[in-house]
Image 1 (cartoon, rainbow, N blue to C red):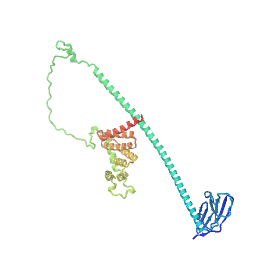
Image 2: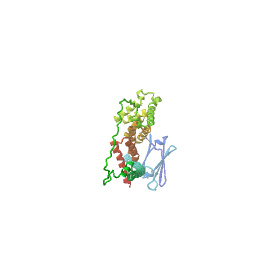
Image 3: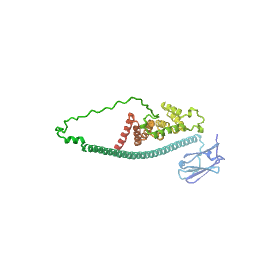
Image 4: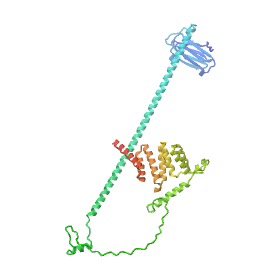
Length: 416
């Protein structure tokens, strides 16, 4: 049961009523105000002040201030006139109850309206922020698309100019060869001694209408050499690591490749402090590579990346680790990482020798695929062409290369 406050005071002007309510030691944050045009309530437990106003007031311009232990309520009047009484003089509880309930209902409606207005304002602000962000992202996308189109147009123009130069060079070379053949055909042949002698002895040689001699040359039979004696020849082959013959190989590049492979197997970081807890097989890069290959085959691309990551930390100079991790990143759509790993693998696959041709082709295709998925078709075409030179009979590779050419030519046609 609250304690009713009766020791309040009030003053008025012709337009405003001022009410002072003692707070009796209550803190400002615990004071609750409710004001309508005919009802005022100030609640600060356990005290309660209620005023059933005798005249209506403007509830929208009503204010309350708390300070020095007193709450001062300012109520603007609806009409400029002096009041005889602040509150109604009736003691009818039913009427007061009706006024109180009407005031509470109106206050709740006002709170709901304010809540709706606040929610609508927040929604409008969110919508505006979203529209602004979408506009900014659209402008950024348009800028990137325009930049890509400019780069594609530039690359296409450079490719067309290069192709034109190649055709002109090929035509020039063909014309030169044709002219050389014609010059050789038109050059007169010098007569030999026997032909001159035959021409001088006209009585002995009879020519037909086409200039062919009817005389038959009489040649003495040639003496054949005696057969050689049979013997055995010892053949020795130089040991070769590479499948090609020694005369067809580039020995310095092959020796450099073998030396790099040996250094890659020897170079390791197994003594890194955080790797001390690994088992012996987990420190073997070949074991980790097989593990990554198994994860990749089963579709566990993240597991494969983790295995290749650890293997690369142990041995960073093995090209297959970077190339296989690039394949994983392609599956996971980490395209920039795929390009980085494929480029690292190609850097390690030097010098270019037949032993690493297949590995270079795979790395080039993976980097080219990442470029194409980023819509950088000109760069992707270069990698696919490089792979096609290494594996010219691969039908799938030929089809993919032609598809990229068609895309580039279609883009160029669309821009023209």
